[in-house]
Length: 218
Image 1 (cartoon, rainbow, N blue to C red):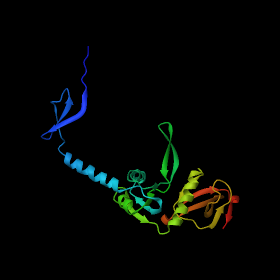
Image 2: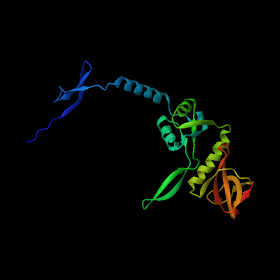
Image 3: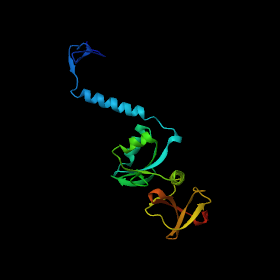
Image 4: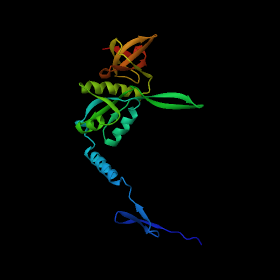
């Protein structure tokens, strides 16, 4: 007959030595030498987490975080931990990898993450290891509208690509199709009509192909 020994989770401590309760209660477990430092760091982290409450929408302003290389998604995860909203427009990129087709989500605007912050969360974001420069947005409403246009186009799964420079053309509105009601600047390319959904603040635009007869001059 096989006997088994159960152990209790309770512990008793004496002279800074900890003993497990149970059959082997006389076996000491020594404290880690850096326990005091570890405990202090945990207390400090807890205080920061408690201080950063989930902000109300009315208290938030848009900011553009220019991030360090390959840190876009890391900053998004940082925002989840510290309770500040982040927006990272991404598009699907499909590649063959070892005989398999793999789909990746890539940032539409590499190097940029869009944040909504108050005074406290702005400090938390700036002090992270991911932000190279925090840019203030002077025209909050215009920025919000332009970003929403781009997010809407991505949500409709239309063909979209980044345009490094904003092209010169007529201001138009899309009157039909999945982008109905969206406004942008238009230019001709290879016989195709391309609408540029502008994000003026960072000097870039997302180019979306649409049929010419769906457009109307503003």
